[in-house]
Length: 374
Image (cartoon, rainbow, N blue to C red):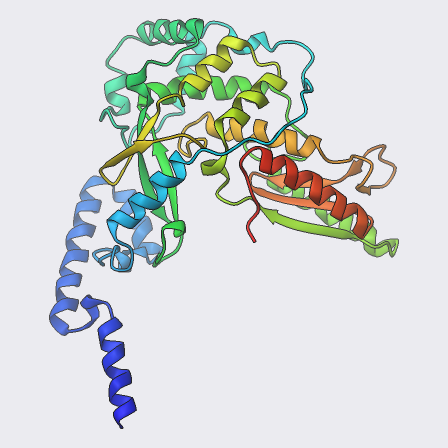
């Protein structure tokens, strides 16, 4: 009986406060109702989606019950500010000629396409500007300003400030790593980076293994290719060796020297490289009201970040031996890797071959400040 009472007392001490009494539950319900009403008045579509998905039940709950605000700030600001030593990487040009198309003056048509892709109700950056504020200025004004920045290869310091919103990856996060950081820059920067991202997608050659962030259904292509590999292995009764990898905190961990080196190896024009790297020099972000330096990572939420991540990952795929892979039908080349953003699969016909590929891949990831989830 004594043990039972002690156990019950321990459970009561560890239970969330809003579950301890009826009054707490009523207060929480009232808070949920108020939050839903506010969301309904602000964004009915988002409110309906939250109700239909059942996520409304977590509104009004003290989300920082297990995680203090200071812990979240400390975890993410330390991660962004941590500098890493870059391992030696081979100096080999991946593109023969300079991609001067990336440094052409911004055209009005490009600008209009980028603006059309912006969400008018998206969260504002640290300057508080929404898309409607951006549109108050003449189009040609912005085009001329963007061309000046690209011509001198420099982003003014005032636009290097951002704010980071932490989105829960799970229903009830209980540690900082269970949040996804979305770093939001000014709408002015986002429009220009949409233009640069579109140019990079069109002109920077990426490894065939990487299917993410491209204007095609890359996921479906990888699924079909993987299905073909499995079918052929079964039909011909051939051994198939594969390993699935998940790059840990990929976007937040890339070191900036690797970004510069990857751009140089792809023969991106020097002034474009200077501009891109200037966006990281002295950059800061605000996490829950506290500002800190950004010394690593490509910002999730920035239109240019996905293509920069792909360019950095290119070097890791090129470190793989193309002769160690899986031949499909009468194809001249072999399939040795399938990737969709941070999810990578290596394929080989032998255990030794797969082990060798894995070591090559991990070394190049380490050189970029990346690592695999254990």
